[in-house]
Length: 191
Ligand code: F6P
Image (tube, rainbow, N blue to C red):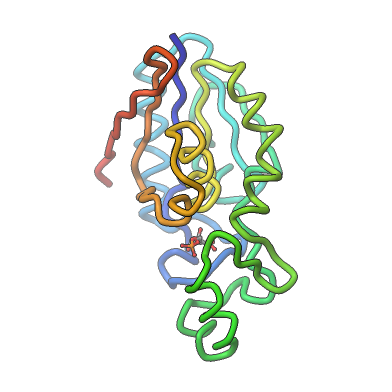
């Protein structure tokens, strides 16, 4: 039997401002989540636990206090929103109304100017997903769009459903093999 754990980073400074992307630090509440996450994993004593994060500060800070080997992987970085990085969705709608409308029409295939689409994320994730399937007791700390793609892959979702999968902050998603499928458990840490 194999088990994987997934989590978004704790709340970041940009999350509190409703801004897209960037590379900000955790907020005070995000730091509380990092502490709660470390407590959960350090107390649970999982055999051979190891952690993969993205290369962004917010995922590294979220993993910081977990006693386990860590690897930082650029393919786990959040969707690159190109010219819309660091804008709020309202600012995007004001400054790039046509882009905003196009994204709304086809969120899966829409590629930000100088950035990425969900399909682009699926493509850069392919080698990571292949490696992931050889792992066990692995915690992946990444970002909303990337985790939607990974969970969609493991849970056999249709491609057009991926951009809408609910991956809340401050929640551990545990997948355990169950025959040839995966069983999902949601562990909410209250911070
Ligand atoms: O808002 C947080 C965030 O991780 C952004 O950095 C990213 O662009 C976005 O979520 C992805 O979600 P959506 O595809 O719904 O805009």
